[in-house]
Length: 266
Image 1 (cartoon, helix red, strand yellow):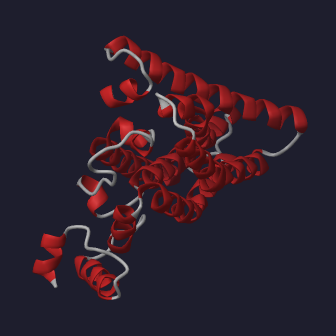
Image 2: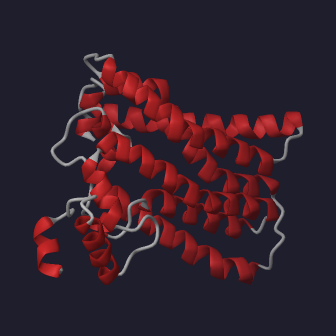
């Protein structure tokens, strides 16, 4: 958290940390409420709204954000991350959070349960707990600064995280968030909430492709090497990881993520 606050040129302390968390939370709630308002006033279904917002967010992630980051690199300023945070990182992160929260928000506010209690209770809790555990493991390994893109603007000795859960998954945060979102949607017992949760699950493979492309451009060769070995949202068996690393290395397309381990496992 200290690295994040310093990148923002804020004083490091508990007060500033609480303020930042409050800003992100309030922005998320505001975006969620605006979406609900637009749906009710315009008559657009929540399903159509969810798909449209994800489409716009993915365009931001895959096109607009990388383009703006490249422009920031050409137009240096003292605090580049602070400039990017206010311009697009805060709204981008808040939109993603609001999309993951929309299914349970919709289901709770609808107040209509359309599934047998036993059916959704058995499915909802394990899925939610698994999702939260994956998110927690990813956030613990990644840290707040990396989660909020700090090291894409501020140099670091390790631009790519390969420890903890990132040894087996490249994108645990989005995977876990989508799983938890779907679990909560099932828990409401509402059909619309379930459909919204399913949309979040279906977004995962599109997200993986766009985020991998963005990370390759932003982080360079270390991420290319990492992607060649580690699975996106499905863990690879160690034998498959070794074969993948060997094939890419023999073709000259990557260097091993960990040369010492690679040498001993060939």
